[in-house]
Amino acid sequence: MTQRWDLLIRNVNLATMCGGYGELRDAAIAVSNGRIAWLGPDADAAQHGTAYDTRDAARCWLTPGLIDCHTHIVHAGNRSDEFEARLNGATYEDIAKAGGGIMSTVRATRAASEEELLRQSLPRIGSLLAEGVTTLEIKSGYGLSLEAEAKMLRTARRVGGLLPVRVSATFLGAHALPPEYAGRADDYVDAVCAMIPKLAADGLMDAVDAFCERIGFTNEQTERIFRAAKEQGLPVKLHAEQLSDQRGAELVARYGGLSADHLEHLSAAGIDAMRQAGTVAVLLPGAYYFLRDTTPPPIAALREAGVPMAVATDNNPGTSPMASLLLAMNMVCTLWRLTPLEALTGCTVNAARALGLQDDIGTLEVGKRADFALWQIARPADLSYAFGFNPCKAVVNNGLWRNPVVPVTGRQ
Ligand code: DI6
Ligand code: FE
Image 1: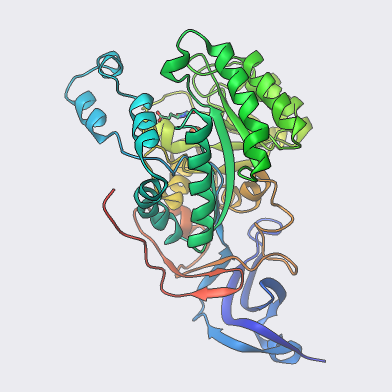
Image 2 (image 1 turned 45 degrees about the horizontal axis):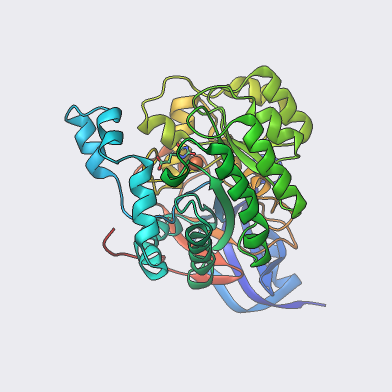
């Protein structure tokens, strides 16, 4: 008996991402109720079913929708003034003394209304969506008080309601020490632990993160936050080993963490702990590039250990004002020698896993959510090869075809 599908995409080349690229040329893919119902050779489609809406993909390539699994994309203001001042000779110290750096973003974000926060964030998000991103992680962490963190997380949830994108919201209360807690980091960590059940009760977060670093929070303070997260049944992830080895990867692995992110200073013990726990290594080349860092993450050792690697933009105003996941894919290949297959796996299969969504998204398989990106490219490696170029022709979210993708525009 043949099916009546909602959508059938014909004359398409599929990169299913099941076992490498999982290439299936001259194929077709069918969708029912927002999920993949069938895929196979184009010539076989008619014997399996017909659809209400049939599209000819003109031999473009279809991949799972891209997943940006680490961003701070909801924030107010930007720091191009500091960027320019530094390039004109100012030091970080001058900028910090003038109240700049992360605190300038905290001030701007605290001062912004929810509407304003949304308005300023939409153009950046639009740029990601135009490149085939269908799932986006958004962290809080520029509010640093219960009300301001809740405002950021509510804004993240609203993005998911307003735009064709699935949003995973992460609470990053332990991002920086707010000025009102200067010299009292442990008291602030207590306050962050107390925020977790309140924000969780309002359904505002899907995971909990922290910045474990000399200039952030200690391993012990991070562990207290993880315990508070676990009491609410929330998964954890961590900004780990970005600037120094704080044994953060071992800590987050011990808590069964979804991911450890950055990892430029990751040790062999950290890699081993991640391997055993199945914790994903999230690679963030934008921050490495923008900070002109020279210590790459231990890619070869991660690969050898079989630790899954994901790739994300880390979009934030201080260290990675990058709103292109395709550029991040090119950067991990060029700067760190990932293969184009590893880069695409890092924005699909492994990014899904870094969000705990691997049963729902990240590959083209029957039963998975119908979130796709359609590309006018010759082969999947083109996605990592070209940079500053967007070959995305259409996006499918939850089985809904959108073509063309128009970025949201507006003043930053
Ligand atoms: N690591 C970073 O690189 C950013 N946050 C973090 O935890 C910096 C954020 C900023 O400077 O605004
Ligand atoms: Fe980050």
